Length: 287
Ligand SMILES: [Zn+2]
Image 1 (cartoon, rainbow, N blue to C red):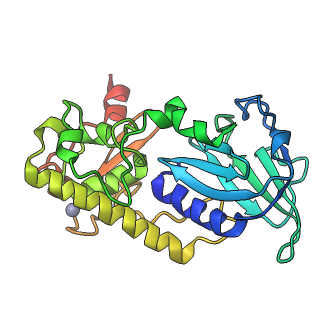
Image 2: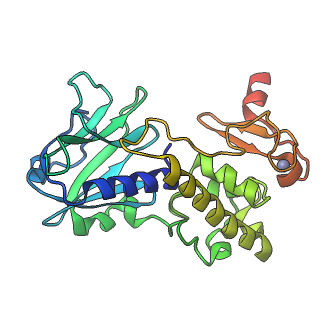
């Protein structure tokens, strides 16, 4: 699932490439992708793109005369810019914006594509000044980056595990399953520590870890991510998806807890006082 750093680097690349470009035509081949009907997608034809930005993990593509596309990639979507047009058989296409040729470019196409079997990614075409009123956007917590919230301790003051709290977009926007593992490992904090058990010192370490980890990911992407935006971004991960490998800091084996649709990784020596947390998948199988 693309998280803040992946969406941010994509928005930066697309903004640099598309600012001022004019939409020639717009289509939504995925039957479920477009969630609004007024104005119709054809309202974008002939309009210039004025900005590509992000709110949390969502894209906002703005057009002149005050229209905007709000795009949610869900777990398997990608927003990519190609020099060629998609063939009619590209089953991954959910939204296609054909970009008119200009002095510097041939015909280009901005594509929302989705991998896997589910059609979950979605798009809304809205008046630009209504984007922030959309429930998903209006209920977002403060952005995790570039400045993590100052009052992190107050923000996380709930009897819920940090691993859950930090991924709750209504608490703090932008962090998901991959980066939460990296952030908690960087802060030397247990994923199951309750938010309301954080000391001042731990809250500071966590705030610093959020900044360091997300900055680091973006610096990495600035060096390696180019258009059209690869199907798989090269996530610079140290613990997430590294179960069984040695911890890059202390050498202890990274452990994992498997949930139905994701896996949580941590270093027991540095995060849980040596305790290996119960793997729920394993205990379910043993029942
Ligand atoms: Zn370690």
